[in-house]
Image (cartoon, rainbow, N blue to C red; front, side):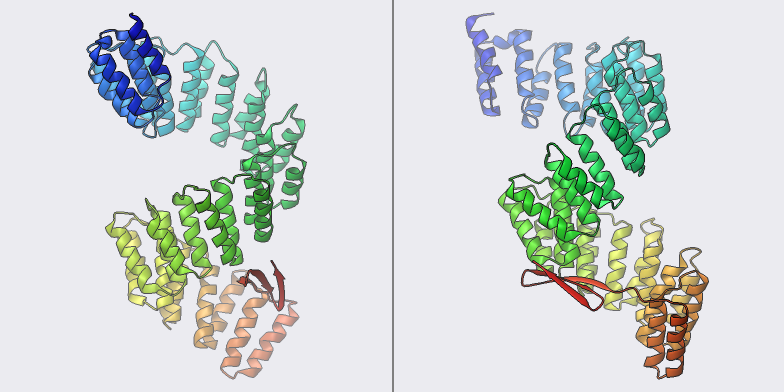
Length: 559
């Protein structure tokens, strides 16, 4: 190789943009350096350093090589398998086989990873068969890939068979099998593997703790955590999240305070624990502390914070978090966008919700549903139904939650016929089976319209969960002052085991509305005799930057 050709290869190693790559390629063409297979392969390898444009460029470059080496094919296959579209690597592998190129042991591992990412068991099985035919399944790296692939396809039994037939295991082999059992929820099998491991690294301990925590077995998770010879930040984060899911916020906070070091996930885990544990004020306070320490929040943190603002009706706090997202140029993806829409809608700021929705690209079913539901609960029934029609026209398939939102819109708008049509279309048009939430919405629609007999027939057609539906219908009786039907529903609720003070208070109010004072007094006396009390109502709202929490007749205020 000439000195000039060697210089080109050195330039390729320091290439930092597609534009520079094109300049080097042009120079190599002019000097006929690409007649050397090694130089061509190096150019191909360098182009793969640029994920999107570089991969397309590499494919065109490979097509111009008369006889590309297996190494060249493998380089491009590995890049495609690691790309956002791993399925392209499988189709490209077929082109490789059609060209007559011979795959080797380095060809298969990235393709097996692609099958794992796609959960494509059929393609994975075919690759495994070809690996056996090419005698390329014997090395431990390939074996580990197969174990992981079968586990990702929910066939950890086949992964176990690969593990058992393999003559050589390393720590990664054991961890692949352990993680497979954990991810499939087979914790008893996972514990056997864990106990049989010749050496347990921190990854093994964390995997087992994560499995117990995910299943809700916090006692076993904590026991393993306490037995660990060494811990890393992931060990602490897993247990903090586990206690948070179990509403053990005191233990989550204790662990958070005791951690020797924290990362963004640690802060997110604690903030999420507070937000999901009905402590939104504590979640927002912790974020302020996090911000002062210049810790950059991740997507999960932002979602939990916006959820906390929704719970508190803290519009100004929500706006500040939205500004923080914009100021730090955080990507407003479907998850954050949908949460912003939900927050603004629940805080009654529909215009801001619409702005976020209009700017969101692309829009998935969750963002459409959040906007439809936001319009519905704020009294914009007609606009909610228009948006539902637009969603269908744009080819986005509604899900069960979407129908809850549109039926809620019909309820608020008094649109009985539209509700009947949508309820029927769930099964007939969209193939969705109505759930208890959809029946409750229909009962509410019919009840608000005074169609109490039709509502009762609908409740009686449900084989299970009737208590929720009777409660929904009871509210309609209160609206229309129907004391006779109210008493009938109370009797049904008592039969179903729902005998609380709130039901008797509402029934007494219905009697009072109709001037049936003796019945109202008798109902109150029955409630007193049973030692029942009404659960105090809870509400939260914001006034001039202060969060106001109302429980019963007591109001608390905090900044």
